[in-house]
Length: 362
Image 1 (tube, one colour):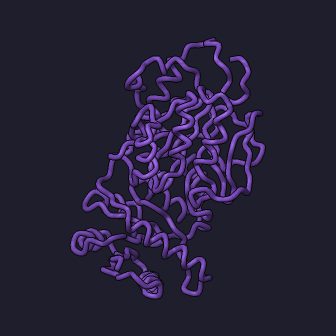
Image 2 (cartoon, one colour):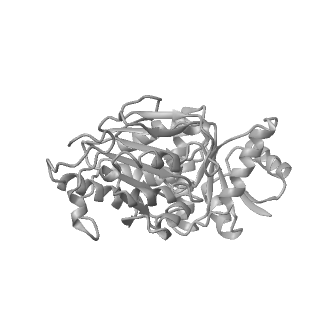
């Protein structure tokens, strides 16, 4: 049985969530809390497998609850909200920045079977995440950390980088915030991101990430140009790649690793496009999406980074890449951003290398 703690100051909503979990089978409501104090007491007393915290419009602050739980007794927190409500969606992403592992739509009791199944599967899956500690994000907006030289071979700093590609899944919003916030300003190259996220949240995620980092952030469109300083996020339900004209390609191709968009698809699209000038980053997430393709990029000269275990919510994706020998560097997200900033500032102008996408002369 999966032990669930429900945190919500709305009695009716707590009762509705309790009934939904009971109908799903395999869940035990180990406790219910209507205040921060109750939540902190129960999370210690009952040691739930997962905590459901609802972002609503009442008095309970879901962001504060999440942050305090992660400090007092780190547990997998799933934020339950309505992604159509801009204020509630913003709350969900702020809670993920504070340490929540996922956000999911709040289903009605009369919701379609597929919607209820998706909600229950999210709760089951996130209950398996073993949160060890809460690592504060040092790359906060407005505070640009001092860039530091890369560990290992400093000659890598003399390559020209023209593109950053990033893959992330569980724990990704927090990691992406730290990584992007640590990149230099003005940002002189484009960034492409694949983040596994519930489709209903993708618009809110793009908006939140832009607000949190101060960067121009949007969902990618088919044919979009890769512009300096622009961060494009792969939209559901498409696979996202890059063509030889430095444009985004969106295709309704089959899922890979059970997901669409997939990190593997994006990384693979760059293999024949002079990847030496590409930095590929694989952040926290379950499974192996992107791991083998990071290795292939590494073998073709891309500069590759995998998130370290201590800062990852789930070390599956980056851990698989590290085991394959795919990573030039293993770093927390903010240090990865600092390192790339150092490389950009240290690069040798007029190095005569080829463009990463067009193959033309530098």
